[in-house]
Length: 326
Image (tube, rainbow, N blue to C red; front, side, top):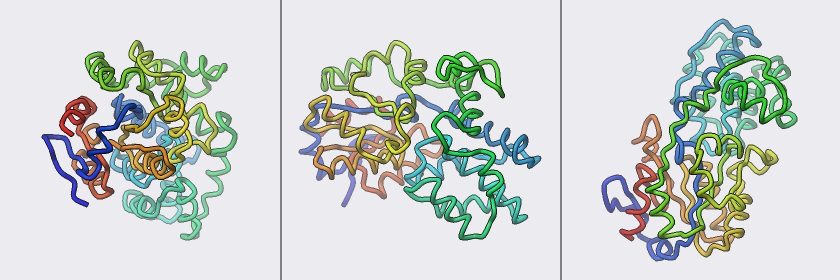
Protein backbone atom coordinates (compact mmCIF):
# COMPACT_ATOMS: atom_id res chain seq x y z
CA UNK A 1 0.00 0.00 0.00
CA UNK A 2 1.42 3.38 -1.04
CA UNK A 3 0.51 6.46 1.00
CA UNK A 4 0.46 9.75 -0.84
CA UNK A 5 1.47 13.19 0.41
CA UNK A 6 -1.20 15.48 -1.04
CA UNK A 7 0.01 18.68 0.61
CA UNK A 8 2.56 19.79 3.19
CA UNK A 9 1.81 17.98 6.44
CA UNK A 10 -0.99 15.89 4.87
CA UNK A 11 -0.67 12.22 3.85
CA UNK A 12 -3.54 9.95 2.79
CA UNK A 13 -4.16 6.41 1.65
CA UNK A 14 -5.51 6.88 -1.92
CA UNK A 15 -7.50 3.65 -1.70
CA UNK A 16 -9.66 5.19 1.04
CA UNK A 17 -10.66 8.37 -0.83
CA UNK A 18 -14.15 7.17 -1.79
CA UNK A 19 -14.79 6.15 1.81
CA UNK A 20 -13.49 9.53 3.04
CA UNK A 21 -16.03 11.32 0.83
CA UNK A 22 -18.81 9.63 2.84
CA UNK A 23 -17.59 10.87 6.25
CA UNK A 24 -20.44 12.33 8.29
CA UNK A 25 -19.01 12.38 11.84
CA UNK A 26 -15.72 13.15 13.56
CA UNK A 27 -14.50 11.91 16.93
CA UNK A 28 -11.41 13.28 18.68
CA UNK A 29 -8.95 11.90 21.16
CA UNK A 30 -7.98 14.62 23.61
CA UNK A 31 -4.35 14.40 24.74
CA UNK A 32 -1.87 15.14 21.98
CA UNK A 33 -4.75 16.04 19.66
CA UNK A 34 -7.04 18.68 21.15
CA UNK A 35 -4.55 19.45 23.94
CA UNK A 36 -0.74 19.51 24.08
CA UNK A 37 0.12 17.60 27.27
CA UNK A 38 3.92 17.66 27.12
CA UNK A 39 4.11 19.89 30.22
CA UNK A 40 1.10 18.40 32.00
CA UNK A 41 0.52 14.65 31.70
CA UNK A 42 4.07 13.87 30.56
CA UNK A 43 5.53 15.95 33.37
CA UNK A 44 3.15 14.28 35.86
CA UNK A 45 4.58 10.91 34.83
CA UNK A 46 8.13 12.11 35.46
CA UNK A 47 7.32 13.75 38.81
CA UNK A 48 5.32 10.76 40.05
CA UNK A 49 8.14 8.37 39.16
CA UNK A 50 10.66 10.57 40.98
CA UNK A 51 8.46 10.73 44.08
CA UNK A 52 7.70 7.01 44.21
CA UNK A 53 11.23 5.72 43.68
CA UNK A 54 12.61 8.08 46.32
CA UNK A 55 9.89 7.97 48.99
CA UNK A 56 8.52 4.45 48.52
CA UNK A 57 11.12 2.37 46.66
CA UNK A 58 13.96 4.06 48.58
CA UNK A 59 16.01 4.57 45.41
CA UNK A 60 17.89 7.83 45.75
CA UNK A 61 17.86 8.90 42.10
CA UNK A 62 15.78 11.36 40.09
CA UNK A 63 15.41 12.72 36.58
CA UNK A 64 15.74 9.27 35.02
CA UNK A 65 12.68 9.48 32.81
CA UNK A 66 12.74 11.00 29.33
CA UNK A 67 9.88 11.84 27.01
CA UNK A 68 11.34 9.34 24.54
CA UNK A 69 10.81 6.55 27.10
CA UNK A 70 7.20 7.64 27.63
CA UNK A 71 6.52 7.68 23.91
CA UNK A 72 8.28 4.33 23.58
CA UNK A 73 5.64 2.69 25.74
CA UNK A 74 2.85 4.50 23.94
CA UNK A 75 3.95 3.16 20.55
CA UNK A 76 3.43 -0.42 21.80
CA UNK A 77 -0.35 -0.13 21.61
CA UNK A 78 -1.05 -0.98 25.25
CA UNK A 79 -0.30 2.17 27.22
CA UNK A 80 -3.04 4.72 26.66
CA UNK A 81 -3.25 5.30 30.44
CA UNK A 82 -0.50 7.58 31.77
CA UNK A 83 -0.52 5.83 35.15
CA UNK A 84 0.16 2.52 33.37
CA UNK A 85 3.23 4.16 31.80
CA UNK A 86 4.26 5.49 35.22
CA UNK A 87 3.90 2.03 36.77
CA UNK A 88 5.95 0.37 34.01
CA UNK A 89 8.75 2.94 34.41
CA UNK A 90 8.85 2.45 38.20
CA UNK A 91 9.08 -1.34 37.81
CA UNK A 92 11.87 -0.81 35.28
CA UNK A 93 13.88 1.36 37.67
CA UNK A 94 13.50 -1.06 40.56
CA UNK A 95 14.36 -4.04 38.34
CA UNK A 96 17.46 -2.32 36.93
CA UNK A 97 18.59 -1.40 40.45
CA UNK A 98 18.21 -5.00 41.66
CA UNK A 99 20.28 -6.24 38.75
CA UNK A 100 22.82 -3.43 39.18
CA UNK A 101 22.51 -2.44 35.52
CA UNK A 102 21.98 0.91 33.81
CA UNK A 103 18.30 1.84 33.76
CA UNK A 104 18.50 3.84 30.50
CA UNK A 105 19.68 0.68 28.70
CA UNK A 106 17.39 -1.74 30.53
CA UNK A 107 14.21 0.23 29.91
CA UNK A 108 14.79 -0.03 26.16
CA UNK A 109 14.57 -3.82 26.51
CA UNK A 110 11.38 -3.48 28.57
CA UNK A 111 9.82 -1.19 25.94
CA UNK A 112 10.86 -3.53 23.13
CA UNK A 113 8.97 -6.36 24.84
CA UNK A 114 5.84 -4.30 25.61
CA UNK A 115 2.73 -4.97 23.56
CA UNK A 116 -1.04 -4.41 23.43
CA UNK A 117 -1.47 -6.12 26.82
CA UNK A 118 0.21 -3.11 28.46
CA UNK A 119 1.48 -3.51 32.02
CA UNK A 120 0.89 -7.27 31.86
CA UNK A 121 3.50 -7.50 29.11
CA UNK A 122 6.00 -5.62 31.30
CA UNK A 123 5.32 -7.87 34.28
CA UNK A 124 5.70 -10.95 32.06
CA UNK A 125 9.04 -9.71 30.76
CA UNK A 126 10.40 -9.04 34.25
CA UNK A 127 9.20 -12.48 35.39
CA UNK A 128 11.01 -14.04 32.43
CA UNK A 129 14.14 -12.14 33.47
CA UNK A 130 13.74 -13.59 37.00
CA UNK A 131 13.71 -10.11 38.54
CA UNK A 132 11.75 -9.96 41.79
CA UNK A 133 9.86 -6.66 41.98
CA UNK A 134 7.09 -8.02 44.21
CA UNK A 135 7.95 -5.59 47.02
CA UNK A 136 7.23 -2.41 45.05
CA UNK A 137 4.22 -4.04 43.34
CA UNK A 138 2.74 -4.83 46.73
CA UNK A 139 3.29 -1.29 48.00
CA UNK A 140 1.75 0.35 44.94
CA UNK A 141 -1.16 -2.14 44.69
CA UNK A 142 -1.68 -1.13 41.08
CA UNK A 143 -4.02 -1.23 39.29
CA UNK A 144 -6.13 -2.59 42.14
CA UNK A 145 -9.52 -1.06 42.84
CA UNK A 146 -10.23 1.96 40.68
CA UNK A 147 -9.22 5.24 42.39
CA UNK A 148 -8.14 3.38 45.55
CA UNK A 149 -4.46 2.54 45.12
CA UNK A 150 -1.38 4.47 46.19
CA UNK A 151 0.08 5.07 42.74
CA UNK A 152 -3.14 6.48 41.27
CA UNK A 153 -3.57 8.75 44.28
CA UNK A 154 -0.07 10.21 44.01
CA UNK A 155 -0.33 10.71 40.24
CA UNK A 156 -3.76 12.33 40.39
CA UNK A 157 -2.77 14.68 43.21
CA UNK A 158 0.20 15.87 41.15
CA UNK A 159 -1.82 16.19 37.95
CA UNK A 160 -5.10 17.63 39.21
CA UNK A 161 -3.88 19.74 42.11
CA UNK A 162 -5.63 20.16 45.47
CA UNK A 163 -8.89 21.78 44.39
CA UNK A 164 -9.70 19.57 41.42
CA UNK A 165 -8.55 16.43 43.22
CA UNK A 166 -10.91 17.09 46.12
CA UNK A 167 -13.73 17.95 43.72
CA UNK A 168 -13.19 14.71 41.82
CA UNK A 169 -12.62 12.26 44.69
CA UNK A 170 -14.40 13.98 47.59
CA UNK A 171 -11.30 13.71 49.79
CA UNK A 172 -8.31 15.90 50.55
CA UNK A 173 -4.94 15.18 48.96
CA UNK A 174 -2.29 13.50 51.14
CA UNK A 175 0.95 14.08 49.26
CA UNK A 176 0.73 17.31 47.27
CA UNK A 177 -1.01 20.66 47.66
CA UNK A 178 -1.48 23.61 45.35
CA UNK A 179 -1.99 23.90 41.60
CA UNK A 180 -1.84 20.74 39.52
CA UNK A 181 0.08 20.18 36.32
CA UNK A 182 -3.23 20.14 34.44
CA UNK A 183 -2.89 23.94 34.44
CA UNK A 184 0.00 23.48 31.97
CA UNK A 185 -2.34 22.02 29.34
CA UNK A 186 -2.18 23.92 26.05
CA UNK A 187 -5.46 23.79 24.11
CA UNK A 188 -4.91 23.33 20.37
CA UNK A 189 -8.56 23.55 19.36
CA UNK A 190 -10.10 26.94 18.55
CA UNK A 191 -13.50 28.34 17.58
CA UNK A 192 -12.46 28.88 13.97
CA UNK A 193 -11.65 25.19 13.55
CA UNK A 194 -14.88 24.22 15.30
CA UNK A 195 -16.83 26.38 12.83
CA UNK A 196 -15.14 24.66 9.87
CA UNK A 197 -15.89 21.23 11.33
CA UNK A 198 -19.53 22.18 11.87
CA UNK A 199 -19.83 23.08 8.19
CA UNK A 200 -18.87 19.50 7.34
CA UNK A 201 -20.21 17.43 10.23
CA UNK A 202 -22.95 19.61 11.74
CA UNK A 203 -23.49 18.36 15.31
CA UNK A 204 -21.79 14.98 14.83
CA UNK A 205 -18.59 16.01 16.61
CA UNK A 206 -17.59 14.02 19.70
CA UNK A 207 -14.71 13.19 22.05
CA UNK A 208 -13.41 9.74 22.98
CA UNK A 209 -10.52 10.14 25.38
CA UNK A 210 -8.69 8.39 28.17
CA UNK A 211 -9.32 11.50 30.30
CA UNK A 212 -12.16 11.92 32.71
CA UNK A 213 -15.05 14.28 32.00
CA UNK A 214 -13.97 16.79 34.67
CA UNK A 215 -10.41 16.93 33.36
CA UNK A 216 -11.45 17.50 29.74
CA UNK A 217 -14.03 20.12 30.73
CA UNK A 218 -11.51 21.97 32.94
CA UNK A 219 -8.95 22.31 30.16
CA UNK A 220 -11.20 22.84 27.14
CA UNK A 221 -13.39 25.35 28.99
CA UNK A 222 -16.01 26.91 26.68
CA UNK A 223 -14.96 24.67 23.79
CA UNK A 224 -16.10 21.61 25.75
CA UNK A 225 -19.77 22.29 25.05
CA UNK A 226 -19.10 22.37 21.28
CA UNK A 227 -19.04 18.55 21.32
CA UNK A 228 -21.88 16.05 21.39
CA UNK A 229 -21.37 15.28 25.07
CA UNK A 230 -24.20 12.76 25.22
CA UNK A 231 -22.25 10.51 22.89
CA UNK A 232 -18.71 11.41 24.00
CA UNK A 233 -16.76 8.93 26.13
CA UNK A 234 -14.35 9.73 28.98
CA UNK A 235 -12.60 6.47 29.72
CA UNK A 236 -11.05 7.47 33.04
CA UNK A 237 -14.61 7.41 34.37
CA UNK A 238 -15.28 3.94 32.88
CA UNK A 239 -14.27 0.43 34.01
CA UNK A 240 -10.65 -0.40 33.20
CA UNK A 241 -11.61 -3.05 30.64
CA UNK A 242 -13.09 -0.29 28.44
CA UNK A 243 -9.66 1.32 27.94
CA UNK A 244 -8.24 1.71 24.45
CA UNK A 245 -7.70 -0.16 22.21
CA UNK A 246 -11.02 -1.80 23.18
CA UNK A 247 -13.33 -0.48 20.40
CA UNK A 248 -16.61 -0.73 22.34
CA UNK A 249 -16.66 2.93 23.40
CA UNK A 250 -15.93 4.09 19.86
CA UNK A 251 -18.63 1.82 18.48
CA UNK A 252 -21.08 3.19 21.06
CA UNK A 253 -20.22 6.79 20.12
CA UNK A 254 -20.66 6.09 16.42
CA UNK A 255 -24.01 4.39 17.00
CA UNK A 256 -25.17 7.17 19.31
CA UNK A 257 -24.56 9.79 16.61
CA UNK A 258 -26.20 7.55 14.00
CA UNK A 259 -23.12 8.02 11.81
CA UNK A 260 -22.53 6.31 8.48
CA UNK A 261 -18.75 6.73 8.19
CA UNK A 262 -16.73 8.22 11.06
CA UNK A 263 -13.33 9.87 11.29
CA UNK A 264 -11.41 9.13 14.50
CA UNK A 265 -8.53 11.53 15.17
CA UNK A 266 -5.81 10.30 17.54
CA UNK A 267 -2.08 10.42 18.15
CA UNK A 268 -1.20 6.93 19.41
CA UNK A 269 -1.08 3.31 18.32
CA UNK A 270 -3.91 2.54 20.74
CA UNK A 271 -6.04 5.04 18.82
CA UNK A 272 -5.08 3.48 15.49
CA UNK A 273 -5.75 -0.07 16.68
CA UNK A 274 -9.10 0.94 18.22
CA UNK A 275 -10.25 2.61 15.00
CA UNK A 276 -9.20 -0.40 12.95
CA UNK A 277 -11.10 -2.76 15.26
CA UNK A 278 -14.23 -0.61 15.05
CA UNK A 279 -13.98 -0.58 11.26
CA UNK A 280 -13.48 -4.34 11.12
CA UNK A 281 -16.52 -4.83 13.35
CA UNK A 282 -18.75 -3.28 10.69
CA UNK A 283 -18.75 0.35 11.88
CA UNK A 284 -17.05 2.15 8.96
CA UNK A 285 -14.21 4.20 10.46
CA UNK A 286 -11.34 6.20 8.99
CA UNK A 287 -8.31 6.85 11.24
CA UNK A 288 -6.44 10.15 11.20
CA UNK A 289 -3.08 10.17 12.99
CA UNK A 290 -1.74 13.48 14.34
CA UNK A 291 2.05 13.65 14.67
CA UNK A 292 3.00 17.29 15.23
CA UNK A 293 2.51 17.28 19.02
CA UNK A 294 5.10 14.52 19.48
CA UNK A 295 8.55 15.38 20.83
CA UNK A 296 9.86 13.51 17.78
CA UNK A 297 7.33 14.33 15.04
CA UNK A 298 9.22 12.57 12.24
CA UNK A 299 9.33 9.29 14.19
CA UNK A 300 5.60 9.51 14.96
CA UNK A 301 4.89 10.27 11.31
CA UNK A 302 6.96 7.27 10.25
CA UNK A 303 5.16 5.08 12.79
CA UNK A 304 1.78 5.95 11.29
CA UNK A 305 3.14 5.46 7.78
CA UNK A 306 4.52 2.03 8.62
CA UNK A 307 1.10 0.99 9.95
CA UNK A 308 -0.72 2.37 6.89
CA UNK A 309 -2.83 4.96 8.70
CA UNK A 310 -5.65 6.23 6.47
CA UNK A 311 -4.84 9.91 7.02
CA UNK A 312 -1.74 11.45 8.64
CA UNK A 313 -1.65 15.17 9.49
CA UNK A 314 0.78 17.38 11.32
CA UNK A 315 -1.98 19.15 13.26
CA UNK A 316 -5.76 19.18 13.65
CA UNK A 317 -5.83 22.55 11.87
CA UNK A 318 -5.14 20.65 8.64
CA UNK A 319 -8.22 18.40 8.88
CA UNK A 320 -10.65 20.71 6.99
CA UNK A 321 -8.10 21.22 4.21
CA UNK A 322 -7.44 17.47 4.06
CA UNK A 323 -11.11 16.66 3.61
CA UNK A 324 -11.49 19.33 0.94
CA UNK A 325 -8.62 17.81 -1.04
CA UNK A 326 -10.01 14.27 -1.30
